Length: 127
Image 1: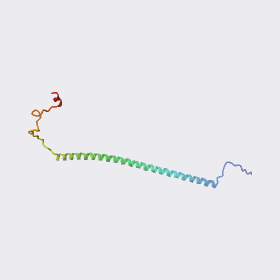
Image 2 (image 1 turned 60 degrees about the vertical axis):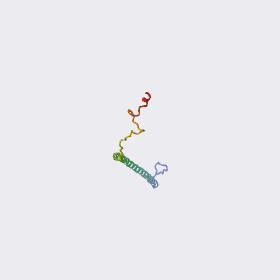
Image 3 (image 1 turned 90 degrees about the horizontal axis):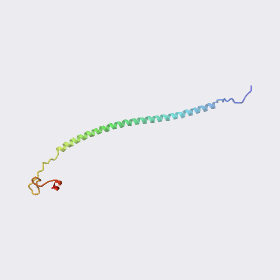
Image 4 (image 1 turned 90 degrees about the vertical axis):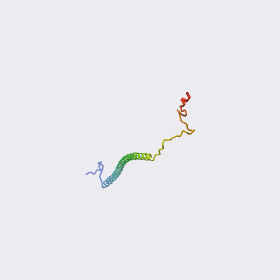
């Protein structure tokens, strides 16, 4: 039997190689678990952001409805206020009887036909 030291291209897989492969596989698993944790955290943040945006949309919708109701109530109150103000103004109105001028005094004169000739400027210039 002849012992040949020439290599066949095949390597012996030793315990040291197995330990190295095991450690490399564990490191890869740990790296992938870290990636998965980061992606889970990103998905969780995205979901929270989506829920926040949905809540904001609901808040805006509710705020718009409340604003419309407030405007309607303000219009109603303004109408009621104006009606009450008109009623109070009419109740407390100061009415003055028609003025009577005494035309017997010297300073006071009647207008035409029996007193002062009152004409427009054009009529008075074309005379």
